[in-house]
Image 1 (tube, helix red, strand yellow):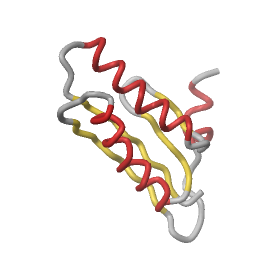
Image 2 (image 1 turned 90 degrees about the vertical axis):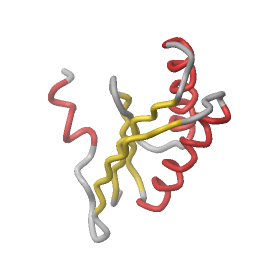
Image 3 (image 1 turned 60 degrees about the vertical axis):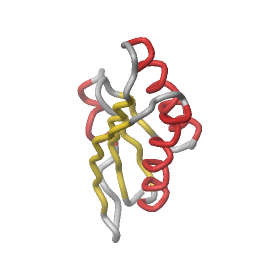
Length: 98
C-alpha cells in the first residue's frame, strides 16, 4: 500500500437530504472497490495503490454527477510513498476508537 487518499465530496444539492443521498452513493462506490477505507464525518479515507486511488478519486466526481449533482467540488489529500508503505488507517486512528 503505497498511498492513502482522503476525499471530501461536496455535491451541489437542493437540501441536506439530497446532499446526503448523493454522498452516500459516492461512499457506496468506494465500498465496492474492495479497498480498505474509513468513513469520517467530513471525508472518506481509502488505502491502496496510488494509480488506482487516483482513478477512484476521478470516478467519485462522475458518481456524484450521475446521482444528480449539477456540480461537484472535492477536497483531496494524498499521502504517497513510491518506495514503501504509508501509515495505515489502523495505525492512525484505532487507538482513538476503542
